[in-house]
Length: 580
Image 1 (cartoon, rainbow, N blue to C red):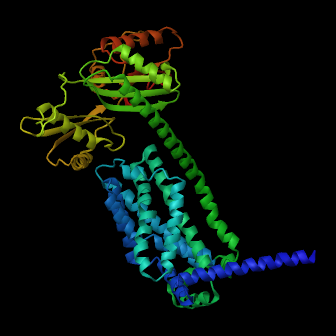
Image 2 (image 1 turned 180 degrees about the vertical axis):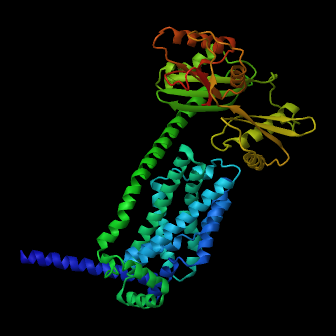
Image 3 (image 1 turned 90 degrees about the vertical axis):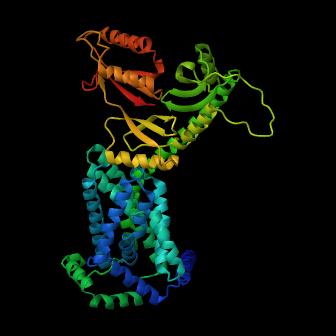
């Protein structure tokens, strides 16, 4: 038994020696001798100061640049704010405090981080209140849904940031900017200020998402900095003695010591001896943050799998569409979208053709698609929109030595296709949704582009200007005449007679809604009918009257209308446009 215990003891001693040898090798690889460790410790302690005016100006201006870049949706401006990166120094100081168990440095770092975050957040909040518009840009929304991958990025960035700080080589100059951009501490902090400035439920959701990303970066960098400094053995006795001598001559350190001495339990403590306790202080927040991050990552993974599934269905739908129109001359597929909503599959097809798509062709294609997808035809909502084109006579290709001049129609088609390709994926600022656009070229050569968007309110004038400039750059046409036209997404009341099914179909709002439906094939309408517990037939009578108005009088496709029943008085007996 004694021999067994002796063997275990020797094994532990051997592993401990190997651990110390690895730490010595790590410090040697970073050229971190005692002198370098001492300099590093003192420099990071000095960076956790509250008296450096330049540091606070960096926080202020970095927050201003990041906020304006987020609002303008400018990635270049946001990168500029990242490069300033004033928050990295106090975060590394916090990691050093945990590695060395230094209570004094920890208090200074936490106070610095708290006040820095408060200043950056507050300045962003003030700027958002002063700006004439506060649309939710793509750069803002990209920082409201962090996931586990953001945590991993922050861990890697924190490690290389701490390592780069330890070395005095040319590599520091090249790596620190990359670390600052990868972690991006200031933009998510400004997203919090933006969300609080916007207010309401939407603003709180934005602020929560930005706050989660900011805390993720902060905790991860601190954790990795702590591990790097532990490996570096920065808490050697010679280093602590040198730091103690420096603190005796540093007035700010002496002030912090006097404040800590007011707490009886900390009066005699200058270091937290227990490494387990220090490790727990950073691991517990990381575990708490990991829970919502993992949930968000799961949602991203499921969304990606859903997208892959829809893409496979889209490929099948396009393959069988090409077979279906093989014997139809002058028919070109323009757009094919697939989306799965619950148990139903929505397929939207838009094509150019010189003849209509008959009901027989539609049913044949629907049944064939349902068969290959192993679905019931009733579970597929198929919408086919045929855009009429001028009928042309087919011509056999002729070999010529010189190019055949394009006619006016072909030139126009190529011109329009170029703009269509450029506008693919173009997005307006939330909550506006791009639904359609119209391009017209006059006889003088002037091109006009009208973008139709669905929203409950007009885009602010400054926002319109920014979007117009963005579209002109995208189209590479600085002289194009561009305008935005709003299609209202507000609910329109159905003027039913009291306790009756008849309604006035001549109302201006009803006619405008139907006109928009007919003008924009991408739009659908949701009809919300009030439940009638006291009159079992009233609901069906009203639905029948609306079906006659929409499907018979206005010839709308049935898959563009969604009927729902509700007992909510504020939304009952209304119609509302939405984009599939």
